[in-house]
Image (cartoon, rainbow, N blue to C red; front, side, top):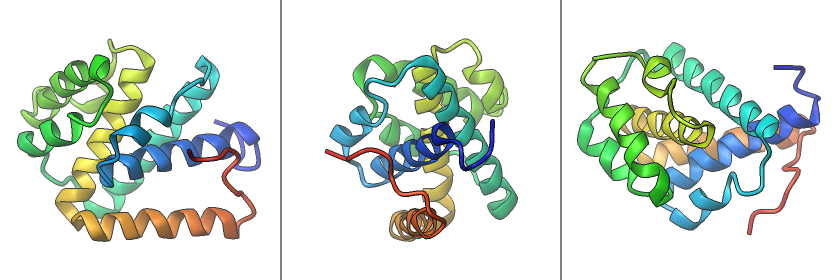
Amino acid sequence: MTAIGDPRVVEAMWRATDLTRAYLAQDRVQVAACLTGLDTDRLEHVLAWLLLDRDGLFDMLGEPSMAVGEIDTVAALAPPEIEFATTTALRRVAAKETGLLHAVKGLALPEQIHAVAICTVVMLLGALGRVTALEKLDAETVEFERMGHPRPYTIT
């Protein structure tokens, strides 16, 4: 990934954060809208940002448990064509059969993105709870803007 000033990186950090927030807020419409119309390059940047963010959570939280019930609940917010693949992959991670990267390797790019976002949300819910996790994401978006990186698109 390139420097944070790169417009693709700025868009990726916003899309990743907005997708994670949509899952946390249980906003099915916004979950579906977050990746609409993105080409492969932009999707790859979103995935890279989500993976960096998830790695940062591991550094901050350690490895929180992945409750299967929580995975199913969060994944149910995914677009229908994505839900089964993400749930199946994340159940393998929860069972400690495999790591996240290996579990999502064979999935299509949008499925990989949703799986990582769902994994991140399950980690946040387990470690911080919904309210605190939403507050954390809201603080991150304020920081993005403070650093001179406003959201480059409109949320509908």
